Image 1 (cartoon, rainbow, N blue to C red):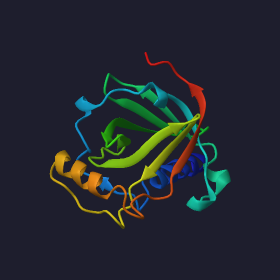
Image 2 (tube, one colour; image 1 turned 90 degrees about the vertical axis):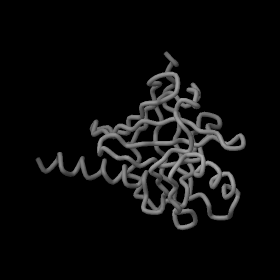
Image 3 (cartoon, rainbow, N blue to C red; image 1 turned 180 degrees about the vertical axis):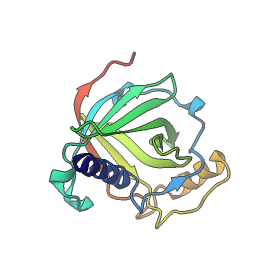
Length: 176
């Protein structure tokens, strides 16, 4: 029982790190998932790479994995887990603002109604997620159109994004 509690605490810590206290979350996504298309570059298995800027214990988080699967033509299923196979599931889809992709991520395990929003891109088998900093941008919106316009307006502001989360591709999966 104690071993399970320790494993669960590491996984919950990872989930909290992904949705850090400074990361902006919204009750509405940037856009409707029906406007999104699956981009196969994101599909696969990714290993989290803690950086010194994040101030994380490398040994504690180095075995955390992110696996991205297509769910349908618009959405991904995201499985976050460690080598002990403790898991958190999320749904996600992409929105584009001025040629910049954003991931809208909703954690499913906790029946969350919030979306965590990350500027995202893949470069040479490295996946980068840039959380929006809620210390700089913390307004809530009643609809996606207003959120979209606000992010468009502020995405170039200094400090708008937190330190990026870095993942290295472990395995590429096929689209379907």
